[in-house]
Image 1 (tube, rainbow, N blue to C red):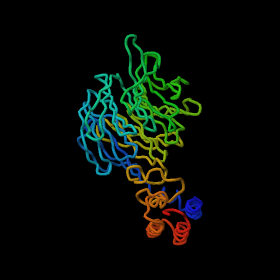
Image 2: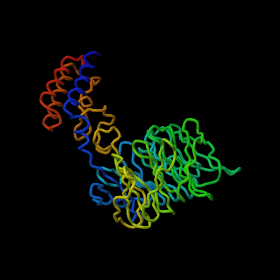
Image 3: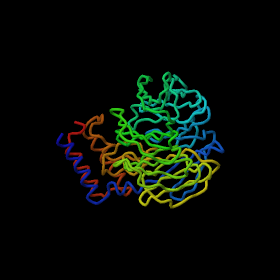
Image 4: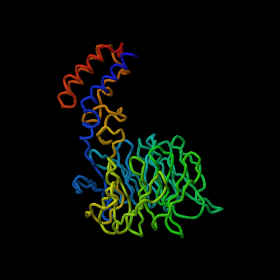
Length: 405
C-alpha cells in the first residue's frame, strides 16, 4: 500500500511541479456541437471556434437532442421516431419507431433509452442492445430528463380524476415509476438538474405567464418559484451549476437565474422564438437556437451579452455540445478513460499513466507492471506531455511499489 501511495504522490507531484497537469490537457479541447434543423430534418455539426458548420447528418429527427453520458451517442427526436447517432462516425446507427410527436429523448445509466410521446401520452422504453421498444409507460409527458447520475428519469405527467399535474420518476432498473404532485394546472416544458442532482428546475407556463419551479429532489418539495418571460420552452444549467438559462419563446429573450439566490439576474434579448440552449464545455458561452430567425445567438456568460449571431438552416431547434466531464481536456466522445483524477496529464485519448497502468490491474508479476509504466511514460515523453526526468521518477516509483506482486 505504501508503494502505491508513493507512485500516486510522485505522479501528481511530478506533473504539477512543471505545470504539465490540467493546463496541458485543457489545450486539447476542441468543442463540437450538434444542431437539429427542423426545416430539413437533419443535424448539423457545429465548430464553435469559428461558428461554422462542418458537416451534416441526414436521416435524423428535428426536435430536441441529447447526448449519452460518455458522449459517444447522440439521440435525436423525430416526429414519430428516435434516432441513435454515432458521434465519432457521424452516422445513424438506428431509427427506432416510437410514439406520435416525440418531444424528447434521454438515456439512463444502465443504457436504456426513454422518449416522450407527447401526442399519445406515453413514454417508450428502448433496449440499447436491440434498439427496439420493449415497454410503454402511461406517462402524459411533454418534457423528459435523466438525473445527472442517470439513476432515474423524470417526466412530467397528469392524473385524472382528479385532474392534476405530477412529476413521474422512472426507475430504469425496473421500468416502473412513481409520481409526486406539482400543484396547479400548467405545461411543464423543460426539466433541468443541478450537476449534483440536488435540485430540479422546471420551466412551466400557465395563464399567469412563465415561471420556473425549483424542486428539492430528495424531498420533492417546491422550494422556490421564479417569474421569467412568457412561454419558457427550455431550461439549461451551466456546467458549474451556478446559473440556469431559460429560453422564453414568445418574449424572444433568455432569463438568467442565479442558483445561489434563485433570482433572475439578467434578461438577454435573442432572436425570434428561442427554442433551446446549450453551453460549451468550458461554460464560457451559451448558444441559443432561434427557431423563427433561422439563427443562433451566442451569449458570453461572463458579461451576459450576445456577442455573436450567425445563420443556420431552416428553423433550428435542439442543440447540445460535447462536454468534458472529468475536466481532463478531452471531450467525452473521444475520452477512453473517464474519471481521470484531477491534475493528471492525459494523452489524446483522455488516459493518464495511472489509468493505462493501474496498480490494481491483473498483472502477471511486478515486472509486467513496471514495464507498462516504463513504456507508457516513454510514449508520454515522445508526445511532449512529460519530461525524461518525470518519466524516470515515475518508473523508479513503480519499481519501489508493490503493484503486481
